[in-house]
Amino acid sequence: MPRPQVPASPPFVPGMPRPQVPASPPFVPGMPRPQVPASPPFVPGMPRPQVPASPPFVPGMPPPQVPASPPLAPLPQGTVGQLQDSGSVQQQLLGPVKELTWKYPEMPVEPTSPPVQFQLREPVSVSSVAATCDENMVHVQVKKDLFGSGELIRASDISLGGCGVTGEDSVAQLLYFQSYLQACGSQVVMTNDTLVYSFSLTYIPTAASNTSAPIVRSSGAVIGIECHYLRFHNVSSNALQPAWIPYAATKIAQELLVFSLKLMTDDWQFERPSNVYYMGDLIHFEASVKQYNHVPLRVFVDSCLVTPYPYAASAPSYLFIQNHGCLVDSKLTGSSSRFLPRTQDFKLQFQLEAFRFQQGDTGSLYITCVLKATAAASPTDAEHKACSFVGQKWAGAGGEDQLCSCCDGTCGSRKARDLTSVSDSMWEKEVSVGPVFIRD
Image 1: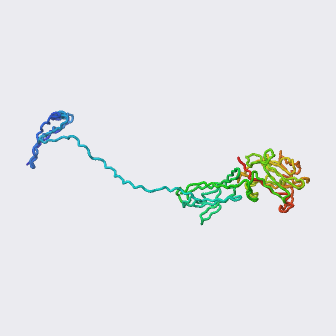
Image 2: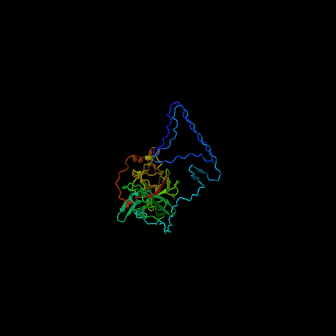
């Protein structure tokens, strides 16, 4: 059937008002909506019913008025509203909200692990360092497996007071150190009965040079090493002599002459009970010779050498009395060092201002002097004198000023003596004092 004809909307004329459209009645809540005639059922082949066309839009004309819907009336509280359309179809509004029963899923519970038998391994003491002290040196042996962990240390990472390794055994995995008692940063402490030399064996691990990883697998360590010596026993006549304080080396020639060199108190009345001095102190020495059955003798100090070690041949050294009795320290340094005026022929007193070596300082000094004796009745000469530089000139301890003029040059030219012969050894001997400790 043909579709029903729908009347066409009038054409839109600009400037003409739009046709008025009846307004819908207002919506009142609780009141049924006005019934709208149902559209006829659609029959295929039949034309649709004609719907009145809206009037054409004319610019400048107001739009047609649409009737307002009636206001909604409020629904009674506690009831469910119902609406009915033209087909008598009822729709039920929502009622009370049902309680939500969904929950977030819970994390699964891990099973409890059974107790584990565990004990922290404590470090075990290892004997990896051994030291031996002899008359004048200390010998230290160190295992490369210093901590007993299997990690071998490098020789460059360990030192004895700043001194490096002196030997290495690659088969036994051992490192060796050797040092004089006064070297390698040793510290000396005196007690009532002993003289103690202390060293520090220091290990500072460094990262391996052949890897870029800035790590080490061992800790640093400082191991103390001490050498103890009895103060009232002479160790040897040729080695370190930490005997009584002060130590006076005495030489006896054929049991006829006895030469000695001692440290004295400031008033020169007694032997000094301590060998510790401070920088700037005056060290008082007394040289003497005992003649026993001999005729009266006169003693001289031919030369004196200071070293930081108990060997006259060690370095550095300072020859402060030279040229057969010329005390040159006051001229070289402007110090107060000098010979005192002689009061007795068999004694000669002199003083030296305390000092320390600029290089190779150990904090201790050893003084080695050559003493000579002549008959007191013999006249003095250029090889037997005691001269000091005082007041910008040389002066003799016994008034022999004219003999001291050679101190700026060469005094005497005698041939060297053979000290092993009886005749020479009884008139000239080498004696020493030390250690003398100098503190700041």
